[in-house]
Image 1 (cartoon, rainbow over the protein chains, first blue to last red):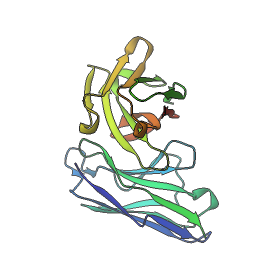
Image 2 (cartoon, one colour):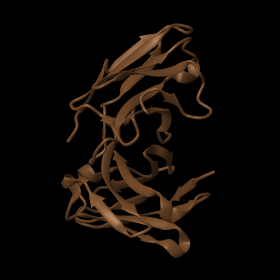
Image 3 (tube, one colour):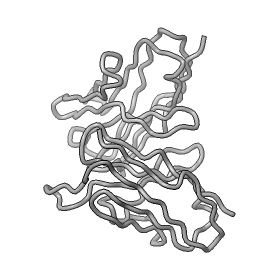
Image 4 (spheres, rainbow over the protein chains, first blue to last red):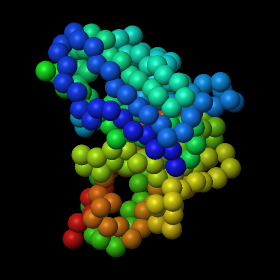
Length: 113
Length: 116
């Protein structure tokens, strides 16, 4: 199984500041069939199901604000939120969809300082 | 717009079974893998398995093999996840998810509580 490790576990940021979450996979998740990294980021607000923000490591899902961006390659990835807003308080998960079983990072809780 | 509507909360005793349904609409049911993911209270996300409605093929996570069965009824575009021999640590919210490579659309979740 591919192990996904996120850091940090939690993050307190000021409104308008930048937040960066890191995700490391135990194997390269670049898939030659799609020429993309099979890495997605999800946002989960309290009491709601997760919602996809980024797929292919860096492609923003339709309707996601452009203050959310994804980057990285190989085994190291990051999600950056610029100009953090109050509504960004959530838990964020990375996930690999390169192989079965699908696996997630442990989650990073983002709060407002 | 794809929609996944799950059945309601369930309370079960240890050793019992639970069957959660996932009624889909807004897309071609047979064309997309439907996954099941669970989340214990305050914990992260855990993959359980999938079904490919077109041919009924399934895959189950090693942890759940022998206890989980995922089925479908294409006539009503609904998938089901049955978990047997329930234990207290099976208490969780169970989600169905439409996969389009990544997890594109999620059901609202079904809370299953296992308690004596």
